[in-house]
Image (cartoon, rainbow, N blue to C red; front, side, top):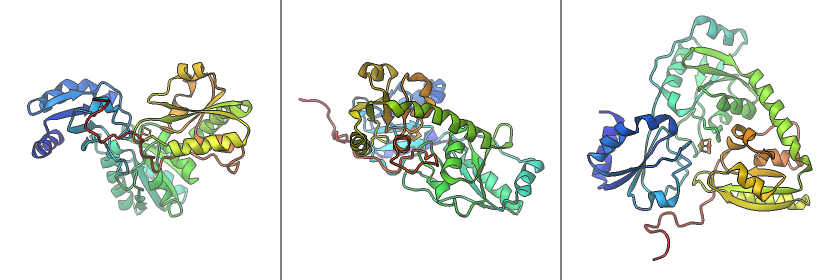
Length: 344
Ligand code: SF4
């Protein structure tokens, strides 16, 4: 029985009638197949929006009339109060890993004994395989305990490295099983330990030290442009798992104490043109911590994470770059669990 079949059985036993399917862009080419399988049993509607994480279930209009949401490609974020019953169908990468001997000797020559293994969720199977290989090779391979924003020990999100923090004193080094660099850079900055990325396609272990140096150079060049800013736009993202209005209020308070003009803005997908229309000198973005970094090139003005703002203006100790992480989210002021939206 595959995961879709299992999901259909659960939905039937829950008495679901109308369901909403959400897929990240990478899985959209499979949408006909997926839709048809669910549509045999239920009234199904597919969201065309791009879902980058389980922090996002779309606008209230899209789920107001469904009794279940099925999201593909992500794992549940346990501390989010979802507005509808949800099922998450993870899409694990399907390959068996092997690590050439010389890759492991890289770790041995550095004298590393205790290795923390971390992964983004689609590579969880490969991370477990890696854990076993390391143990067979006499390393003390460990998975860190996660906080309530992550489902699995050892898991990392671009907004949460708690599985790394929890073992950062114990581990001599970390291996992150992932394809993109973001998670590995985040782990390195969050722990100060040497971090390697393990690429499941090339089966290669690579130190990310150079990438981290490059990242910091680019980031400091970008954020230092905000030093002369007088008008600051503080953005709250309305996605359910990114909504941090209390943090935005704190930033506004701090900015006012510094004599800066501020405006609090909410947005679902923050757009460069909207920020240009507002004519602010800099943006502090309290939503997904990846946005100020991954989308930096799209904005004319500097877009800072909250810790970057605090560090730049002397509100945090200088010297060590602090990655923004989401630990908890504020409850949305909307009554998201109501069955009806709008007036009667
Ligand atoms: S906030 Fe960003 S990094 Fe975190 S789960 Fe959402 S999309 Fe992923």
